[in-house]
Image (cartoon, rainbow, N blue to C red; front, side, top):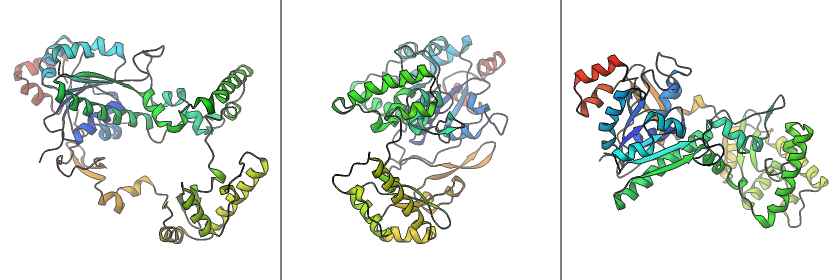
Length: 423
């Protein structure tokens, strides 16, 4: 049986990470995704590449697609789009609003060609407001939304962002894929396409979770006071650490004693322990032979003596866990149903039994590079099962077959190659 998005056709005009991930997720579900990119390849093909036109990042976010290198600034491109867009169900775009219009891939132009088209646009900061036309990337949006300040990490006094994983780009890509699937369902009922707008800004604030929550009765006075204090400290030329100290909303809210949800060093290696309910916390204390007055009614964690008590308790827990190797602790915690796990490295995950058993590693055959192992589908369908994902496309790998399927002759295709319209 085909995948849940079988027969759904997607034109993917996106670049870098967030938009391409959305296209990849749709391809994983069985959609036919045509990646339209410049004749020289989208930027992420060429960033830290290990072949002439391929990088690890491009491979990751563009698997399962077909490549159509198309110079949207050339006159012939519009002629190709007039035949391509009527056959498409979804268009993905992540240019700045002004750029999409200049290239002729804005919503107004494409929906005029195909009113049933679902057009999903990702911008950095949203369509409205003073930052609407500004470019932006994951790191910049982390800085602008309080995420960097929330981490409170510094390198030689300079704020550090979450750079090991593109959190905002990833969540934005998932949001795009989720949104267009909802719009497809709506189109089934109405027969009409629509435009969807989302942004990196929206994804960043969503990732903040309960931090981006203002309860007027609890937070109103504190927030006003904090804003005034931050403005005063900026005027004084305060350091970043001093600014963070003035912002209780940006600092990490400390779990009591930081005892129950953290990484510990055992005798031989680190493990993570997570106890987020009162029964689990008490079970951990019992396992370690400890008591914690902070779990009892009437405890005030803001008092200096309370903080000293918590720090001493945390230190004692660290000492006890350091007395035994990880394997022994993990066995003990499993027997007592205390959530825990080893700290692993990425290289180990490709052969991890749990990862492999759940189909979270897939192997694809790249037309130039051969065997490639990578992340498998995020979800598995037991009824409409998609075919296994294909590798990322080589630059222009499918240009001829796509254009000829639109009714263009081989002579026309070669003419466009000569004119630089296609790659």
